[in-house]
Image 1 (spheres, one colour):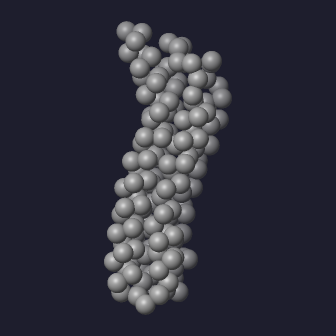
Image 2 (tube, helix red, strand yellow):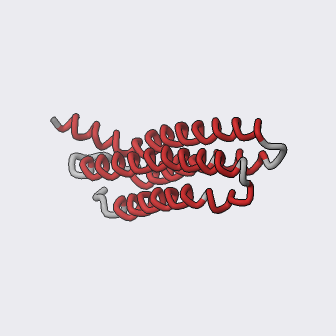
Image 3 (tube, rainbow, N blue to C red):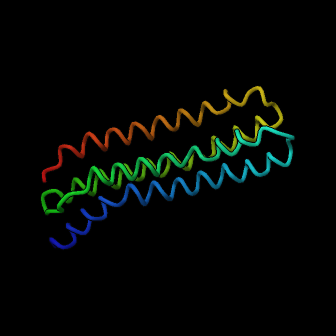
Length: 148
């Protein structure tokens, strides 16, 4: 039984990076597809579409930092906390990246025909980013209380 508990602890350490990466891949791909389609319909301003499509990649960075903050010796005492913080933070990062990609795709699609709303249309993506930052900060704070 101890081996299983230790394995869950190790899973928790690496989950934020893995789940953040999965979410970032899906979110960036979704927004990138919208950017490619929008570039066919406009005559310029391609950089803003490409830049917006990269926004969901930040969750991968947050996942890496959380992984490093959780990285420590895994014991039967620390494993449950490592698992809970790592997996739950990773899931929050994954879902925020996926839905941020959807927000970015919508912003790209709406601003291709009305370029003056580009900044305002990106606001929902920034709000979703805020939730990723909350999960990131909470994971960092909680990781400091895990026994070594």
